[in-house]
Image 1 (cartoon, rainbow, N blue to C red):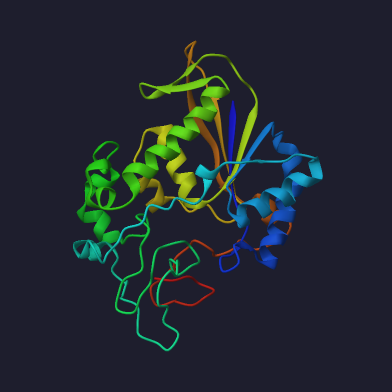
Image 2 (cartoon, rainbow, N blue to C red):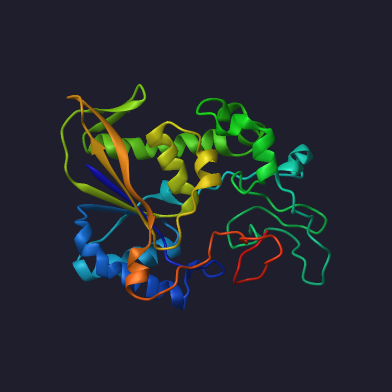
Length: 284
């Protein structure tokens, strides 16, 4: 069996849709879609993923099934309740007081992602995966395949419930296609050479890969940056009858963009050098 994790094209987070560049990216990806030989398609409920899937699948007459659990991984850390975790977010400051400060109910990570209220003098909710390098270095449990579940970031966020819900739903899909996750590998109930495609997001892709490979999601969140419209491809290898593992053939592939002379987006990246901060070159 083959799995494709396709990140949405460049987003307009404010409208949860694609930018004009994002639509060009999706159009170039659509040209490569027929060669991927997709049998079953699944998509996040968020607009940027659904638009990407639609632009890619309509030309080949396919539709994607919407899966709520494919929504971007939202398991926030509330620094207002857990100020001891401020060390994990070195550049985060409380919301300033302005004439347009929200009274309540605004949900924004600062890049269009959902959070709870962002009141003046309070911290916005943070994602558990946008933490600083020094914090990683001083908390090696985050990279441990087992001990990451003992970390403060995990325990003081929405991760305990959300992570297990997501990977449980994902494994149920694979089990319905013949591959049952148990004891650190996938048991083959029936062989399957079909291709399953998941149109989704960076954070959730890292969660699913961590489940497949039995590693910490923090390792992938820190080390892997699949660009917009990228394709990550895994395929089963069954060296022993009745057991399978998934091996990556490509990760974050954007060759379709290079083929169309479309530069990759900087979305999801941080600035390459600290002094080079701008909308074009990333954020701290």
